[in-house]
Each structure stands twice: as C-alpha cells, then as structure tokens.
Length: 148
View (cartoon, rainbow, N blue to C red):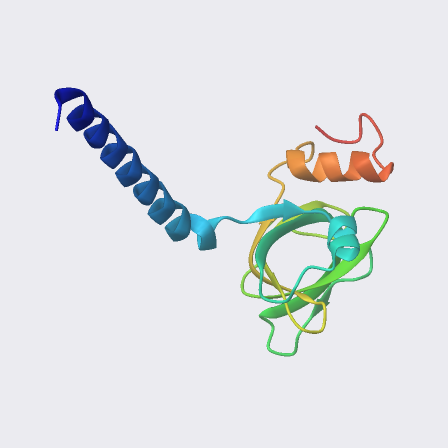
C-alpha cells in the first residue's frame, strides 16, 4: 500500500469514528431535549402521548383547581387562541397565579392532559419567557407594552 492510500485509509477511519461518536452523543441526548410548544401547536400537531416537551402560555383565568391532597393542582394554559389542561403534583413557584406567564415541562397523557413534571413562572411583573411572547404574537393576541 502506498503512502497516499495509507493516509486516505487513516482519514476515512477517523471520519467514521467521529460519525459513530456523534451518533452516540445524539442518541444519549435525545431524551433530554425538550422542545417548546404553544397550546395551538399542540392542538394542531396532535402530539403523541408520552413525548416530553415544554408548553408555555398564560394561566387561564378561573381554571386553577387544587386537589384534595393539597399538592396536586390542575389549570389550563392558553395562548389566547387555544388552551390545554395541565396537571401538576408538587409545590408551585411563589409567583404562579392566573393570568400570568408560565412554562411547564412534561408530557401529554392518553386523555390529552399535559402532565407537568416542572413548572416555571415569570420572575417579575414585566418579564415573560421569549417562547411565550413568540407564541402569543403568532396567535395575534399579543399587545405591545403588556410585558417585557
């Protein structure tokens, strides 16, 4: 084998090893990636149960209910065009309330209820997560100057 062919074989082997390594990294991270969805996107796409993602919007007025155990809560998240029910078991952030921005991480169950494993609320009276603002603007319900 000539020197040129040896170099080519080494380069091809290195590229194959890098490709396999990248595939392993992608496979390992696949379950940790949680994409953001608005309620309208969830309704339109009809996402399968069990897929992990984030949903964001506004906590719908008069939708908050606390379970008899005091730890389980349910509410609806809306982008002013569509809304989805959310169920969460745990302690809510101090700033969580109806009419405020929220981002929840979790998955849909077979009934179409979003089972949240984590709830994030806005941290002051003017901030709203950029994903929520984008979703509200896309629905045509965003009013300039109302936040951020």
